[in-house]
Length: 326
Image (cartoon, rainbow, N blue to C red; front, top):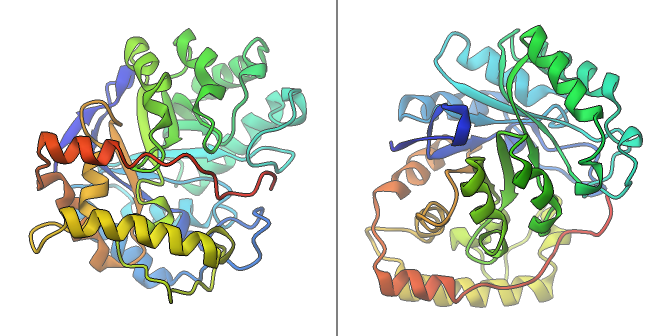
């Protein structure tokens, strides 16, 4: 396992992080009706396997099955030397953020209340990184979030603070990142969606704000296992509609044929890309099945040539398959 320091936090984290949306069974607020089913026994084994191979960074959220993912981490890894990031859901239930009045989305008392709940779910372990699950720079001038964070830090509920950037809209967080008033950002970043590199990442580096990449495998497509006949019994059936699926499969197949081999899978190539020098500090990836843990963590060991990196940079694809309003 490789480790890095996450921005100004000073936290030494594994470059592959464990994303826990899947092990909790999804998030009920999403308008997609069919979430995946999670097996707690398998989930706990995956958490343990990840820890045993060196993963020490676990990303979760109160909204993941109403705190179930948080509780699984506490039950499985209690007493272990791990770093946990969690998120406070928006009061109005909108992903991405829409309401420009922060008092309708993240009132001060609400932020504090939800942080305390996550703290308890995690076994009264101080939260290493507490994040707002959505963000609009329209909220920057309000002191609501600043005052709430100050209370939470004083209580010992959380050490550091960050935001989760709106889907496919990295420029919606430029003001707060430039201020240096937060410690981390979490943002969609993968071979297809490279937009954060345009302005957000350089600004984060300048302000020493840690960068957490989510969806590094594009909801699974960059794992290279989908084909035209792939079906989904969860929310992804609306993300990968038949027309979209065909285009995604064609694009990934081209990359896979050119770059993948017996020594490196497409998933490993995609994860490695997200962690290049101009990319993220850590990539969080779902590992519901214990067998996925080893493949994902070994992505750090593969090499990409300059030519291959340039080829992957040219695979940038501007599109948004997520619904406009949840």
